[in-house]
Length: 57
Image 1: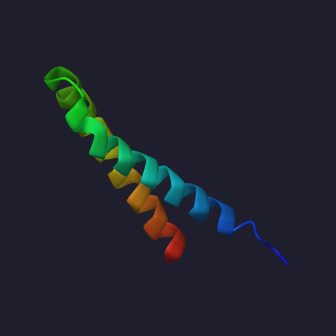
Image 2 (image 1 turned 90 degrees about the vertical axis):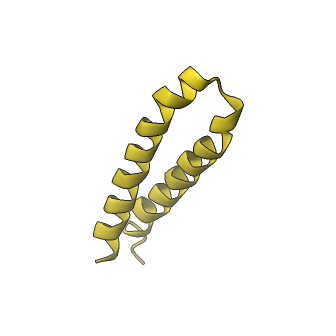
């Protein structure tokens, strides 16, 4: 049984969840931190979703 293809998918889902949680907690940050972090987190989320889409296809 080969489980190797499952690991990248699982790891990407976990990382995507972490980024989503970080975005949820942005409201607890200062305005300067929110302005600095939001674009980076959204960019990271887009890259993770793109990578997930490549794995599924």
